Length: 62
Image 1 (cartoon, rainbow, N blue to C red):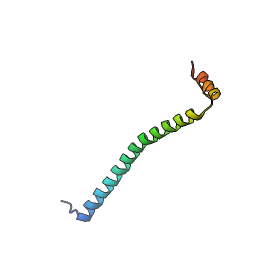
Image 2 (tube, one colour):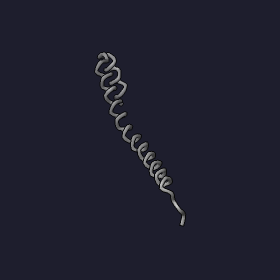
Image 3 (cartoon, rainbow, N blue to C red):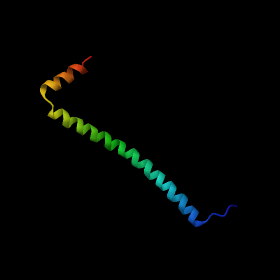
Image 4 (cartoon, rainbow, N blue to C red):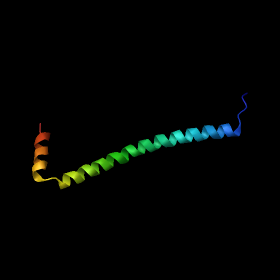
Protein backbone atom coordinates (compact mmCIF):
# COMPACT_ATOMS: atom_id res chain seq x y z
CA UNK A 1 0.00 0.00 0.00
CA UNK A 2 1.25 3.47 -0.88
CA UNK A 3 1.69 5.73 2.14
CA UNK A 4 -0.14 9.02 1.51
CA UNK A 5 0.80 12.02 3.59
CA UNK A 6 -1.90 14.42 4.86
CA UNK A 7 -0.27 17.31 2.99
CA UNK A 8 -0.51 15.31 -0.25
CA UNK A 9 -4.23 14.74 0.30
CA UNK A 10 -4.68 18.44 1.08
CA UNK A 11 -2.84 19.38 -2.09
CA UNK A 12 -4.98 17.05 -4.20
CA UNK A 13 -8.17 18.44 -2.62
CA UNK A 14 -6.95 22.01 -3.25
CA UNK A 15 -6.20 21.30 -6.93
CA UNK A 16 -9.54 19.56 -7.52
CA UNK A 17 -11.40 22.39 -5.76
CA UNK A 18 -9.52 25.03 -7.75
CA UNK A 19 -10.25 23.34 -11.08
CA UNK A 20 -13.90 22.89 -10.15
CA UNK A 21 -14.21 26.52 -9.08
CA UNK A 22 -12.63 27.77 -12.32
CA UNK A 23 -14.93 25.58 -14.41
CA UNK A 24 -18.03 26.71 -12.52
CA UNK A 25 -16.99 30.36 -12.79
CA UNK A 26 -16.59 30.11 -16.55
CA UNK A 27 -19.96 28.39 -16.96
CA UNK A 28 -21.76 31.03 -14.90
CA UNK A 29 -19.99 33.95 -16.55
CA UNK A 30 -21.19 32.82 -20.00
CA UNK A 31 -24.78 33.38 -18.95
CA UNK A 32 -24.02 36.72 -17.30
CA UNK A 33 -22.08 37.87 -20.36
CA UNK A 34 -24.92 36.91 -22.71
CA UNK A 35 -27.47 38.78 -20.61
CA UNK A 36 -25.23 41.85 -20.50
CA UNK A 37 -24.79 41.80 -24.29
CA UNK A 38 -28.57 41.61 -24.76
CA UNK A 39 -29.06 44.61 -22.45
CA UNK A 40 -26.38 46.59 -24.31
CA UNK A 41 -27.95 45.76 -27.67
CA UNK A 42 -31.36 46.89 -26.40
CA UNK A 43 -29.85 50.13 -25.11
CA UNK A 44 -28.17 50.81 -28.47
CA UNK A 45 -31.39 50.13 -30.35
CA UNK A 46 -33.34 52.43 -28.03
CA UNK A 47 -31.10 55.36 -28.97
CA UNK A 48 -30.89 54.76 -32.74
CA UNK A 49 -32.76 56.98 -35.16
CA UNK A 50 -35.87 55.94 -37.05
CA UNK A 51 -33.89 55.88 -40.30
CA UNK A 52 -31.32 53.48 -38.88
CA UNK A 53 -34.02 51.29 -37.34
CA UNK A 54 -35.94 51.02 -40.61
CA UNK A 55 -32.78 50.26 -42.59
CA UNK A 56 -31.94 47.45 -40.15
CA UNK A 57 -35.48 46.08 -40.40
CA UNK A 58 -35.31 46.10 -44.21
CA UNK A 59 -32.07 44.11 -44.10
CA UNK A 60 -33.58 41.51 -41.79
CA UNK A 61 -36.60 40.77 -44.01
CA UNK A 62 -36.13 37.73 -46.30
